[in-house]
Length: 352
Image 1 (cartoon, rainbow, N blue to C red):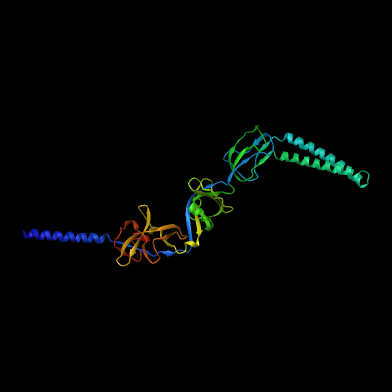
Image 2 (cartoon, rainbow, N blue to C red):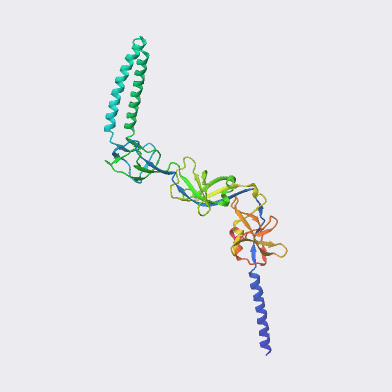
């Protein structure tokens, strides 16, 4: 009987020790950080897409029969490249006739001018001769233009999207014969919310990253922001790459960063991204009570990211409080933690 009592007491003692050891093993070690005051700079990121500068429908300035088309869909053409021609036989005949008429009037006008100098013809006859020569000169230039208009050149560099006619077909002046995608200046398109649109005057700079430059961001220049929101209350923003940038192609996805300069952000604080977590649809941080080393869940309001990548916090914490820097998802309300000054050698990055 005594042996059973002794064994039972030993079991109770071992059980208590085991619970104490287990409880002590669940105390999490954390690294804390103090929220840092902001300097008024922040950034926000948006998904965007690269688009060509626009579609250009190219047509002849005069009517005629197509004599040749020298490109096909998908071809890349350079600005000034010959892409199509019209049959110019009739136009050249008209040019020859206009040239003959001009030469004849030119000779007659030269003779009248000599007679006018000698007072052999009246000033009225001389003025009529000059006017006739001018009219013939205009007619000559018009026919020269008609011949020139039978050649169609690419107005900009880009890709041929469509060829709308074939050789020997008749076209009118201005009829779109070829459609080009203008790639001379590629554009980046994003949609921004109304909350950012009303702060457009505070936008300081723009940049993007993508498959063409994953290791570095490329600066962008603002072209325009559509002043009317779409059905989703989003405003269309168009940006362009620096002159000479050739790595981007239409259809590429990019990530655009908008750097803000808002002095009204002064007084806010920033925290590392890993210190913030979601709980029941709201944003929180863990604040450490320095008296008993317990953590308290505090709701915060974020305003985007600062230039250094940290989150901007407008309310919920102050710079005098200690906030858990990382490992926030393993903590519980009121849990006691062990504060360490630096990450252990086996805890690279201080994530545990």
